Picture 1 (tube, rainbow, N blue to C red):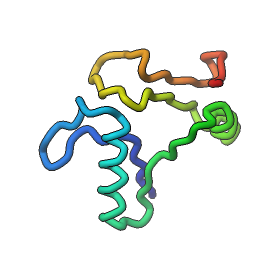
Picture 2 (cartoon, helix red, strand yellow):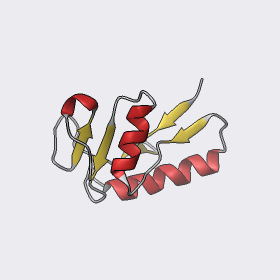
Picture 3 (cartoon, rainbow, N blue to C red):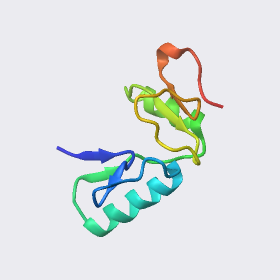
Picture 4 (cartoon, one colour):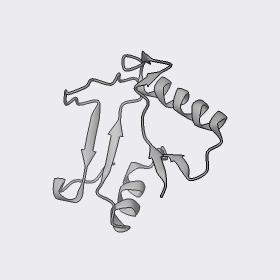
Length: 94
């Protein structure tokens, strides 16, 4: 079994949801780098969204989420800062 992280919402019993995604991502990378855990990883980040989408969906993945790097996490709310693309959405990222 493996564990893959994609975001960090709290650290040291303190919410970091209001921080931009790029800052939360950096905190997550630093935290997992120090932990040195086997079979634990972070969802990769890529600039070439179309290629990642095609590759991931081609491997049987559900889809991808495109995130605005400066966006905070908004629990329970849909936002234009995060866009989930999957085969049934009939569009691919550009």
